[in-house]
Image 1 (spheres, rainbow, N blue to C red):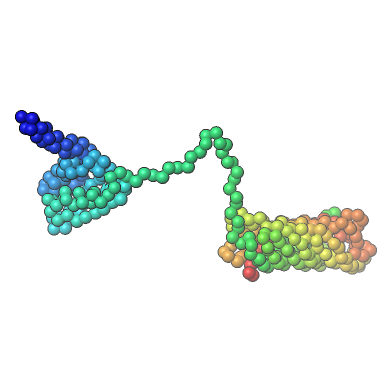
Image 2: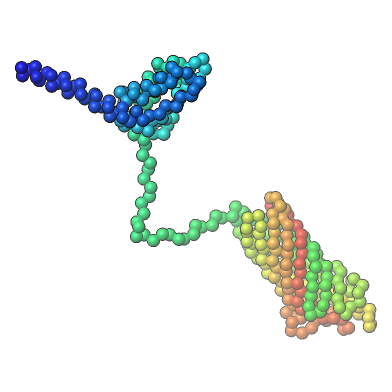
Length: 313
């Protein structure tokens, strides 16, 4: 009797163990949804309906979790099965008959890890640590370390005071750029002018100047702003016929401050708008006359020009 009872107990334990695992896996696999298109037919629909139960009998609860299965119509009555793995990977197989659906899906899942791959933990921060409000460093300009040379021209007008004169203003300039610092050479010429108190014949007042200075370039996307200080030596010529004929020429040193806005038109060309003003220290101390009977040269002038420049290299 004792031996018979011991054998019955072993049989009950052996019979109950797989049933428990199957029930546990069947619960999770029962919620598995298999997408079946209508064009596959009833045989494929029956195989897909039986798939959750069959997987529950063969897999554990961990292996059934996070599984996605979908069918798509193939050729000649076959189907394509798409299986989403627990770790996020996906696999597709061609299934010729409905009876082969379960073995193929089971084989795909057997090679996948049971649990999804955990995401790496994020950085830990001390809640008592103060945040860093330091702004990130500005990216360097791509041409910041390159030496560049450009030449250009400008056309506009210039006015002077206290001698009231308005003149045409033509400028030719060259710039050397290194790390956004400028070395600027400029040549200005006023071919015609109108001055109050001189004969209005167009060439009663003329001036030409040459300057050399330095400055700084500031970038903003396709635009830039050049600010420069350019001491300029100016040669002023005047003549008049009334009340008596007089002619004279005078050289004058002027301190010029220049702001030039540029907008890039491609890689080499740039459209420019230039505003500059200069002052004559000698004319501020006492009037500078080219000759007796003529007007003093302007102590202060202001010019506005538009033009183009091109980068040589």
